[in-house]
Length: 135
Image (cartoon, rainbow, N blue to C red; front, side):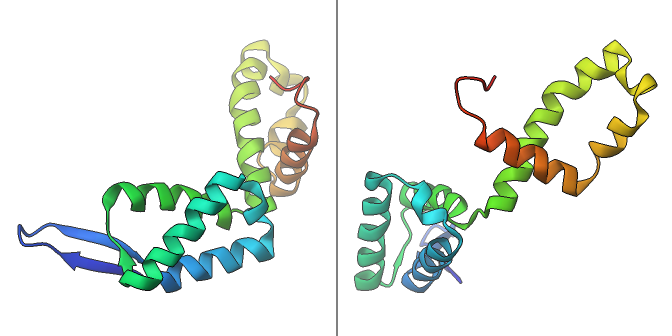
């Protein structure tokens, strides 16, 4: 999937091939991740795909880094985004609940915070909440 290139000084560079970029874009279009990018990011990605098609791969470390960030966003599914949002919320509230002793009188809450189904529900609720109320 990734092209490894050894330079004259012995450094190993990871390149992104056209096939890799095309496959990631297709996956992102299927799972809805492509819509998360704004126009500039989508244009940048498309131009990089065209360049990789002409040149074989992209090996510039700066461009590869930017593209990897976009690929991570593109390949992210709603479930993964929900779990990330839930974990951020759990990291925020768990110390508060622990200090206040909430887990002593509500032990079921501690089990909920470890249940994947509850975390997905919490994350989806957090993601769909109007931004004015988010902390």
